[in-house]
Each structure stands twice: as structure tokens, then as C-alpha cells.
Image (tube, rainbow, N blue to C red; front, side, top):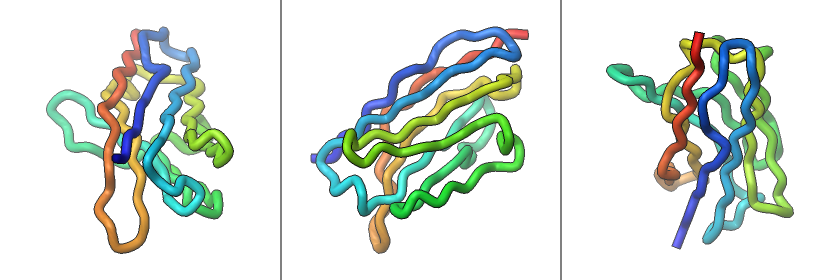
Length: 116
């Protein structure tokens, strides 16, 4: 059974930093793409960042230069380091995993709130 467990969310002031973690189990982690989406109240879920099985990273324009995605295959964990946070980064952040030919599988989400 696939499980994705996110942690690291919380309340932070604008300009601050948080690091999200997503621990995966039940998958062959090193073969899967991993990433993060977020969903703010009243808005659609949007891609924040992803990393291929080979470690290539991709970022939304709104977070490029501020957020860094990384993966530790030995720990089956993907991270999202978020710096210079803005109030508009406030959202529920969801980890996902994906491999070719299969649908994305999602974690339960972790709340990030950035106060001004």
C-alpha cells in the first residue's frame, strides 16, 4: 500500500522559511517522479515543483529562486525548502508520486500559512 506522509508545515512570518518533507512507502521510490502541489482557498490546485526519477527539478514561475526541491532516495523522502515566503504562498501543500502509465498518488496535505 502506497503511503505519502507530509510534515513540516506551519505558521511563519513573511520572509521566513519552512522545509516540507514527504516520506514515501510502498513504492520503488528511486523510479518515481515526486513533487509538490498546493491549493489555496477558492483556487485550483497548482504545481509548485517536481523532480524526476533522475533528479531533474522543475519549478513554477512564482516560486523559482525561492523554493528548492530535493530527494533522498536512501530515505524515500522528498523535500521542499521554502525561503523568502510570501503571504500568497499560503496554501495546503500536497506531495505526490508518479510513474509512467499510472495516475498520481497523493499525500494528505500539510498547511502552510504565511502572515504579513
